[in-house]
Length: 398
Image 1 (cartoon, rainbow, N blue to C red):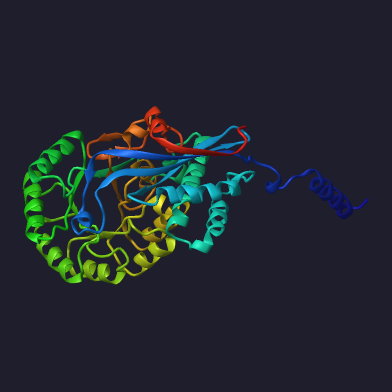
Image 2 (cartoon, rainbow, N blue to C red):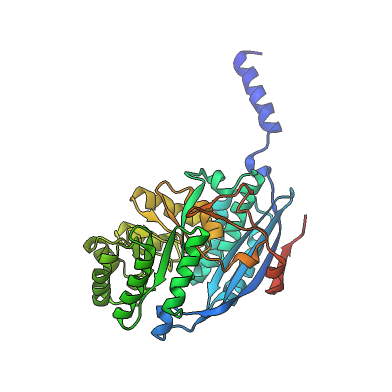
């Protein structure tokens, strides 16, 4: 037998014995979905409440997905909704869950696309993408846990901690004297920045509150404001001009979230940075914002855009265009993502979710530090279980 014939026989034997990647690997065996309502101790009001567009926030709906595989690996993820939509998200998540049973948990990008098209008749943003987020986040958590790495390290961390600012002490329903007390408590706890809500019907009240906090903090401490989309272009221009003297880190959502052009004009006109993006619910919407030069800071929210998979796409485009990053809410997830962003980011601190998890996050010297726990590094507490309204399971436990 010649050399050529020998090689053909050898390759044929190898081909007969070998298996492809599709024929091997782990498989998703079981999914548990939970609808949990987190009550807030004090109803929360921002500018949307003062203008009558929304009611005070009294609770937050969370949809948790706990995914287990045939080989014994597991991950947990969540999505959320404020004021309305939680039961709708949960209902759609129940429609999506069966599509994952038997799938390879490694194929996260493909599975995101699969779930996106499963609900595409309702669109590829909004509730349909937000219902995907618990699964996508759980799969990334599973992947990092399997590697025995914090998610930030799995993604390739640029840093081990992220500068962190507090929002929850500066809502519009809070009297100014209490705001000043909250500011001091936050600063003593190790927070790195303070954000105030603005958008009062009378701009003079906003200016008074911002001036008082700036005086208390001093000129160098990072201070941000958030108007929650409540100004038109004329009011936003006046407000941005008035706030220039306070050396703010950014002015957030001065206009409607989808007024990309208006935000771009403000970003070009004023020295103070413009931040927006938290209300956008897909990579495509964020791409419009970023490519339209619509802000200096981008503020994607992983649960709102559909999970970590689209968030990473937003990060890549944002970094390419030189945008700064300040993810919205859900610091338990966003700490890991912000730690992997090449440009120094900010993390938003909310203590609201603390009772829902057994583990605590580590804040020190103005920065939130990535723990050494694998994955996202959290598990549901007994308190979260007591707040659970509904559960449903799919597949079989391994």
